[in-house]
Length: 72
Image (cartoon, rainbow, N blue to C red; front, side, top):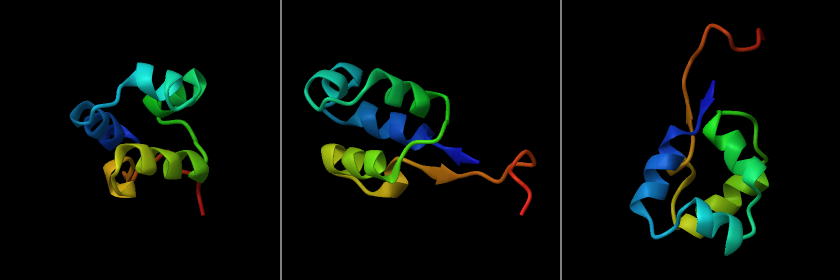
């Protein structure tokens, strides 16, 4: 399972917040909602977040093994 909890920690340490992401950087509320609920987001979104927050992908996302993952 892809988990976005690192994103929230990184966001908390930054000068950005939900308001600035949506108003200054034009990120949609639905995208942030998707991140909050560990739903799929595009690699473009991940790229934008890394650029905005001046961080690496591992500061935004992590993989957590889960029995509910799709069977391969």
